[in-house]
Image 1 (cartoon, rainbow, N blue to C red):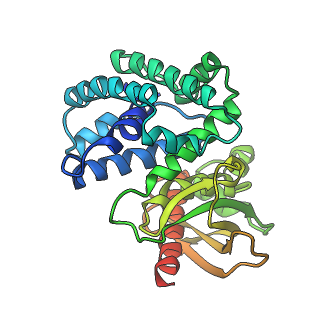
Image 2: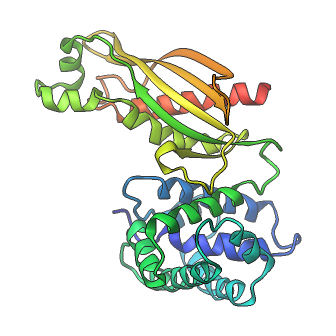
Length: 322
């Protein structure tokens, strides 16, 4: 796991506390900080094994304040978080509308125990797993984890659209993927991976959507036109997305020479409006990396990062041109 500090701590700072500040107090700096952390937490909760991230370090390096100042703020604001629950504020009432099958009492207990575990995290120098912390709070509140996590995802998604930098009609997107069958030669793979281990190589190029979809979900909310993105397998009745984005991987190939073999990917994007039977936008493109060739790496992870960014760029261009 990464260095101390956990996204869960900021959940309460950002969701409970910042929404209650006056307009004079909650300026553009706080809004930017809030959006940055909310998007990061939403992405973390959607991973298969959500773990702690050094978000305080990231925020500190981005000029949001030093670690100790952020830690002190968290300790004070967690006290304010509990008051939201106890006083049943308008913010609290808004979240209750997203509770799904949970009762008001269950939501109350879940948030109370989340504050407890968040306080322990703030006071500790240990590493914590996000899913373990959420699971502990859910068990103490006697709330099924498969209802607790969608509730938090729904709250996060509802709170994402808070700043003026996003377009007014920014959309929520469910993302799914598929890798179509295609023929390939092992020779360029041997050169690129610098290995003759067929098992290792085939694992890297099998069902490529496993690597591209989670990366796309993570970066799509950085586009002004995207309010939130969630994997299809994580969708629940609490989320009402505007679109389904299907990422079809058509082919993985290589270009260049044996000195610097560079991967390329042909991809088809299909964007379908919620409830529609056919996509309103279909886009085929091929992307070849200039930086992630065999001269600098023998793994595809960096290339998959670039593909996700290219998907974000092309989708954002379409959405903002509508």
